[in-house]
Amino acid sequence: MRVTIHDIAKLVGVSPSTVSRALSGKGRISPAMRERIRKVAEELGYQPNMLARGLATRSTCAVGVVIHERHLPLDERSFYGVILEAIEAEVSKHGYHVVFSTLRNHALPRCVRERRVDGLIFLGTDIKEELVRPISTELPVVLVDHCIPGLTSVVGDNVGGGRLATEHLLSHGHRNIAFVAETLEDPSFRARFDGYRQALEEHGLRVRKELIVEGGRRSDSDRIAMEKLLRKKKLPTAIFAANDFMAVGAIRALTKAGLRVPDDVAVVGFDDGALATLVHPPLTSVHVPRVEMGKSAAFCLLELLSSPKKVSQVIVLPTPLTIRESCGCRGV
Image (cartoon, rainbow, N blue to C red; front, top):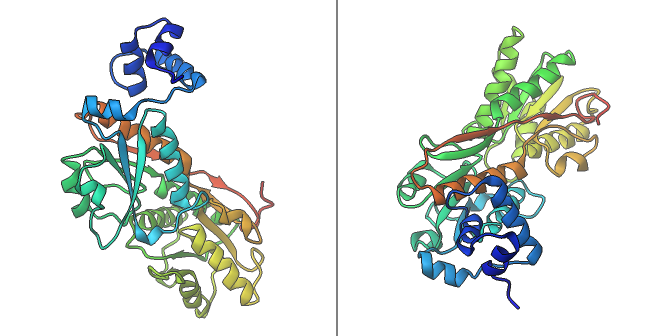
């Protein structure tokens, strides 16, 4: 037989209305009691009747997650794939399901235009403000890996991570450190560059234009960037890449050119995703807490759904350095 909120209420010793408020995330209930009710519901295998709930509250019981088509395809190991999986796991605990859509030709997906979701999570920096701002006045919105003033955002500490990566290379004695990115027009990459610049300046070094290389927004940007760098009269002794994709491309290009990593050129990346351990030597990389980003984004959206007047916030998650062999260390 189907488990109901009455079954949960009887077992916990509270009223069905208390169970309903706890599972919906609404109402004044102590965190301990809320957690106890959720645990019992999970143990009993409770599944909310979404159709009945939607009819009663005029809710779709769905949250939209939107990403630019440039980041497709997604899987459980890709950067945004991990975040999406964490979002889905978190919102499902509260009786919501995810409607995933891609942004094509800078037009909002149909599910958003027709208001078939209760709230929205936008992934990535490709989502433009002029698209997000109008819809944010009608639906709760959370941004992930991107900030727009006045909207709730969840990001990694890009500046701090960029500074940490550069300081690590400086601690190895490197002074000619290149910065390689797809494009500095991307806010995340620009913030990582700012961290790189800050670290250099703190050590009395200036940013040298010839050591800043961009590959552009294209599938072979890693190759293009490294071709530019390898044509320089004097090669850097180290490379800080704005993401792991560019870092792995750098290692491959250096190896193809007959150079050894890290003996001739050290390399550090940013993301610490699946690629970091698949390349040789294993990549030292700034860790972006993607699971935590997804969970935080889901929690923020659920808060906005239960308290629409809640003030927007920017959550910045720490980005520690994962040390492996590409920087010259033994690794961990």
